[in-house]
Image (cartoon, rainbow over all chains, first blue to last red; front, side):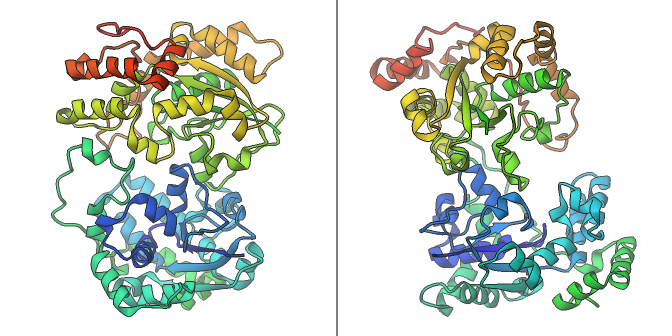
Amino acid sequence: MSSLAWITSCRQSACGLPRALVAGYLLDGPPGDISPEAMNDVAPELSVLFNWGRLVPVEEPLPALVRTFLLPTTEVIQHYRESTGKVVYVARDPRGIVADMFRGNRGKPEERQRRAEQLLASPDEKVLRSEDAHANWQLHAREWTLPERVRAHFPRLDDVCVIRHEDVMADPGAALGQIVDFLGVPGGVDSERVRRTVETWTPMTVMESGVFEMPPGMREFRTPPPRRQDPQFEPSSVADVDESLEAAYQERVRDDAEFAALVKQFGYAD
Amino acid sequence: MALAWLASYPKSGNTWTRILLASYLRDRQVELRMAQLGRLDDAVPDLVNVLRTGRMLPVDQAQPLTVKTHFLPGLSIHRPYRDATTKVIYLVRDPRDVIPSAERMLHVSPDKRSAYAKHFIDNRGLVPWQRMGYGLWTESVREWTSPERLRQYFPNAELLVVRYEDLKQDTVGSLHKIVDFLGFDSEIDADRLARAVQNSTLDRMRDAERRDDSLSHRELKPFFGQGLSGQSLSGYGEDIEEAYQRLLREDEEFRGLAGQYGYAHQPATQGR
């Protein structure tokens, strides 16, 4: 039986980029030539799939991987308990996530603060009971990457591949090759195809392609929005984090052995 | 096991009916947060919204949980609930009124209104929505309201079709039918029904939407419109109204379905 592969990360860890690159690699065409339906077939986002009235198929043809932010403990992910074989986890320095939350002053200040605190909080009972438990960095990383935890959620698990968001941004081609290799895509890693994909699947070309447009095809009846002059696709730096949140982060590293071990494992302990 | 679908083509009164039902079940006015319309009230949830939060629908409740969907019944998102589904309420609305209502929601450009309306008429619905799994207007009505078709997807389901126009004209009577069909109460409390309707008038919804600041940072057109019925499409151009009349004359399935629900008439000039 073929198995499902998830690609997952805590919110704003940008696992959308590697997911899009994998789709681009498999479909081997520029984003402007790719339909949302084709994306859904090879590398869907789970919640987008729901918007299209679909569940992830568990019989052939399966997608190569499915993106989700949800925790593996949720009922929806547990629906695929027996079908799950691989997990690609995209880790990101929680301070970079916080910096992205605050960049551009998007949303209400109190809401940004609440989300930052939720991200860095200890995954206590209150966090576990909350509806956005999946937005807690430690809980998300623990449940998706600690081998005994992941195997408890998915008894037929083959392996987990952890890649860092920072490495994806620094060398998307290497990250794409690593994921394609991990997924065992037939034909192996074609370096020329990787190069082509990275060249054509940039955040700007993806955004302009309409591949994520909802409802699909409506742009025919809409006036296109003005083109952004200064698209800020560069990730925020951990240096952008507010002092109080940096202090909260350091306190968590100091006081919580599991948190400290996870950030060290991913290389964020400095 | 019990589950009821509140199904419809988009812009056919589904959200209003959810509000009416939730107001009846809670016996109070539903708090309206436009940023969370999908969620609205756990008493009558939206299928997509439930799944997006990581939950599956509970199917072990004594009374059927009523759940909103726009998808065609045969889509895989409904498949886990094939046997648990015992009731289906399908809301149907005159396509003449769906067209302007959807236009507002979908942010159609003023200079593309006629092309949009023509697209809807030429295809018997919106292709973008068809691609998303809602089907065309004809597909949605056919698949959900034909008992033989519906039984293929939900073999244990009873069906109630409610016209938006009847819901608007006699809201208490229509809500009574819905509550009775769902079997919420052995004896339906008429005062409670009246309170639910009073708490859910379109005027109240529009007021609540105006007061709500959850989407204030976005430039959105109002979700709750005038709820008009029987409008002429001549506002899109005389050729659009003619195209619609031609569709009624020449497309057998469209004429059949529109006629079955009383939508094959000449339009009122201003709508009602």
